[in-house]
Length: 311
Image (cartoon, rainbow, N blue to C red):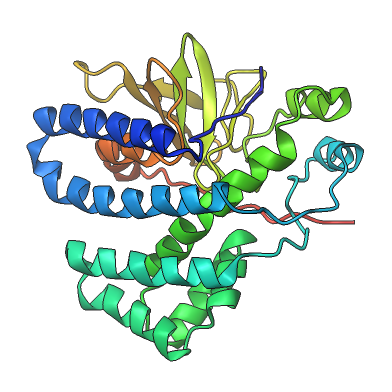
């Protein structure tokens, strides 16, 4: 089952369930690592905003796109993600409000004036919200970095704010566009997807969640879930001696890091009872920051996002 639909749902009771799940997971993390309390407090503020935005989007109307299943299947067969190069109209006013609220949450949670400057730049029009949101949707890191630097803003924080704002929209969109279990052509194309980047938006996975022995890659942006046909490096397909999986903490073998000396990339993996609903993937990410540190101390890094050649 290479591609797996994952949903948070738009109904209030389902959102409450997601928040309850988040709180349970945060409590477990804090019991083991109380020093993460400030980071989790900030994550709670951010994810609450993202979940509320997701509810608004789920209960509204998504744009009607001309993306027939056969057309998408042909793109996927060429290794091109479904949304790459497509004109996807964004709900700019709604997401602009989210940009401001997320910036304020970051400012209150420790980012201080660095985040306040981003909010002020959006409010004043020095940063065009539509352009920023579109750059995030198309995964254009260069445009966001150059634009932020030119305006004296922190590029990584601008990227984070935009990604958080757009993620509920692109998550809902990928479910609407790709979750067609009765369309054999599209289903076959998704099942045949054997690439390390997301079949919907082209992002690399934030990590892999291992559920019942299935190593499922989870998109860092739209939260798509898919499996590879072989156990190999997510980035370069290396499956020989250069590709190694290690558990830096012998007491926590449920948390591992895959490293590849062929391409220098790394990916975290965690064992879980079930796949994380959107947007709780970031909880596993924050809980495994020690794996990031261990990998980077040995010279490994996450590669830049891929660019796709379109016909």
